[in-house]
Image (tube, rainbow, N blue to C red; front, side):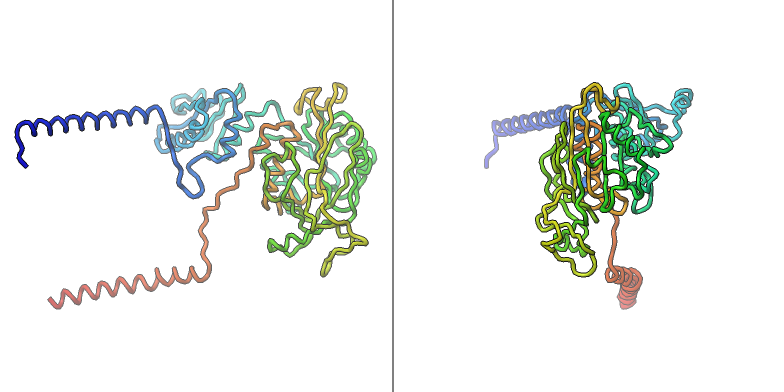
Length: 459
């Protein structure tokens, strides 16, 4: 091909145009990168991006959030804080982060009682909270606590062998109580023989499986609390009502004698028929968007007839294969049409009524013209430490508390389980790894070295 002067000028022009276009594209990409952000988290557990519960909470927070980090000039500490807060800022841009060197502001550090390097002070709508643990779970829980207006007191009835809200025994509710505390609820127990008055700022009274009879005066105090418009969560286990017959009559609830048996559990590899399963939930704000299986060990079925003024519905329904076993649960358990109650069975009911100005029960729950809410469930084990981690039991327990406390906007924010990052091997895999590292690899290196030495010697 013959190249003349005109051809060379054309090539130079093409090269100049290409260079200008290339620089223009680079400049455009640089401009776009400063105005638009695109992130992708390809990790298996999504540990580098916010979980859906955190994103849902941020969408429900109107107004700006101010985060002040008391961190030294150590870049590793500040970088960790920036990276965590940046995940929240991508969802809620009006989260502002500022750094304060505690060495340069000793008076402010003493005033705020800052103790750790990297401690955060979170401010939202006039409320503040300090955070010493740097993690998404801790920061999200802190934001949710700040988002609540006023305190939410859950009062647990005590003095009759009830499940303890912060107890560590398998029977107790300590794990559930801990998560409620992280969400901003205030928990306390109350023995009505020692403190007869149920405080007006009680968001909900919790009766969690008493083992001995209540005194008539105690039952009357609970009835008066209900009559004043107080919210109530009643977790009843199979057996006697222990002095709460009047409460059951006032709510229109009666419990079927016996224990719920559900053969569906055998399909899941569970041999204990006393474990009932609920997989479908009737439409209700408490269960909106909730489609996770929940498990109820040794539950009692109940019948519900709405009393005047109350509106209610079934909340938890078992499958048609279940029944209430009235006889002993030893050996082979089978349905007896003459004595057993067939399914589907109601394990829990939810009810409400309008609270007028004369029956207002607390400034922390709702205004005087709000709604009184009650939940009755024929099982307390599903929230106990031994069973809380099964299925969606924890999420349902948190939803119950949110609904009873009139924090409906937080109901759809489920608990995020901790990511299991452990790596475990079976005996065979452990043997193979041990043999490879301790025997085969050293022998291989020795053989390789000997072969190289032999080749060099032959030269």
